[in-house]
Amino acid sequence: MASTLLSPDCSTSAITARHLIPLKRKLLPAAIQFVSFERSLSSPWSPSLCLSPSASKYRTVVSAADPGSMTTLDTTAKIIDGKLISQQIKDEVSAEVTRLREATGVVPGLAVILVGSRKDSQTYVRNKKKACEAVGIKSYEANLPEDCTESEVLRHIEEFNNEPSVHGILVQLPLPRHINEEKILAGVSIEKDVDGFHPLNIGRLAMQGRDPLFIPCTPKGCMELLHRYNIDIKGKRAVVIGRSNIVGMPVALLLQKANATVSMVHSYTKSPEDITRQGDIVISAAGVANLVRGSWLKPGAVVIDVGINPVDDTNSPRGYRLVGDVCYEEASKVASYITPVPGGVGPMTIAMLLSNTLLSAKRIHNFK
Ligand code: GUN
Image (cartoon, rainbow, N blue to C red; front, side):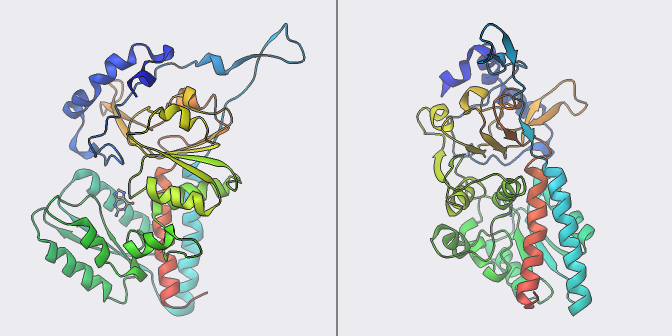
């Protein structure tokens, strides 16, 4: 993989990249300790800088009609606007919540369980709560201390499982190390598993001819973006980078369900750039800043960037900025469609959580 970081466009970046992680750890506030989708497995992937604003080899071509002239094709990718689409979805959810409430008196309810005091998880939970309020979903919260026991978490889950006003339950991940994530996720009633992480829901997602009760939110958000931009999936080659339980694995299953031919690239894949270059659709959820260079992409590929990675930026008042897994400067000159970071997949996750909670309330109350 190291060779891929030493492309001519980025000759100094490999040296800088080696210093990026320790520097980042020193400078970034605790609020920005993001969950890395793939890197947590002591991955050999390392972050890269992509400083080249031009990537000019993709821009200037010789016109076929007039081979003597150099013509610059406008190959700038169309932006897939996750902020806009997520707002549309929230408006749709809000209208349906009102219809449900007026017809039946039922108000959808979402319970969020947060264990410990990770700043990033606290921020996510706060944002989920705010989003619920905005569309008329009632939110419930259980905040448990870092050192609570597994049975305490399971007891709270059981209470929410039995509470009729709660239609969705979400246990914020990651959990502290001493708590067995598998046991916790299996404790959530599958009828209220709005995260779609219960083994039965994931199992159904993986099987032909079966459907889960819920689809995990970030993967569902990626698919929704493709659908709402009328991007064909059937028969296309799709490449998923990263194989986490939260994004990579379920999004690959969804693409396969949608009849794409799917390859997965992960930290032990040989020549990841060659595999990625075969993709008509590339979804990256590696959690490594600027991993995917312009040269990794097939011209015209559709690029969905799930990464949200902090990198040092002395020009920003916060001392850092957020970038995706994909080197946007380069990729936007090769791809046909691309999601920005921020403002791409990020806002879709919460929109899908609201949508799943509404779906659950309607299903439980048999409301069409
Ligand atoms: N942590 C990061 N992403 C997610 C998510 O989609 N659901 C939960 N429960 N925890 C997360």
